[in-house]
Length: 209
Image (cartoon, rainbow, N blue to C red):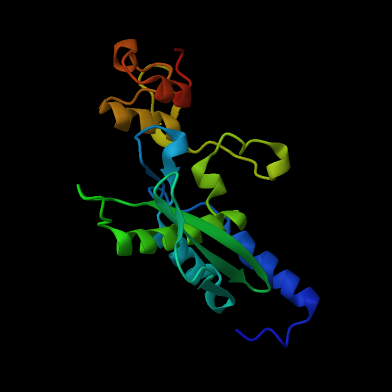
């Protein structure tokens, strides 16, 4: 990507235009959960970031590894890889980690997989610096005015059979989690359905402990 013909002002404007596209919400269903219903376990797959970069940054993005060899962390038995994500004239370095697996003789059995996965995690980490996925992952700080994101909870076409209000995204998450077929909001879902949920899930859905 040759940026030599752009003025500094043009580069700043181009970066701003691209970043505004990059930070838009991903399509519904993009966010995955390592543990169902636990917000802090949510993540966006590496492939979704790549597609967003290709689609909205086009030829104005570049990724390169900044570590020639994996960095080994003995205390966690994991490796670290780093890489630099450049968008227009801005660049950030991301870090990615991955745990090693060992057989009974303590020989590493997933070395190649660990390197590739750590590189992917490094790219995802770098995307975070460009605010990609912030709206979708809904971390606890997302409502802070300083972050600059105003969230509006999405409404479903489904109606709660009790209160007659439209279901929210979180209502539907709970219904899917509990495999409850009738459309109830979080507040009106029968207590016996919510009773045995783990404390972390109750806190996420705003259910009294």
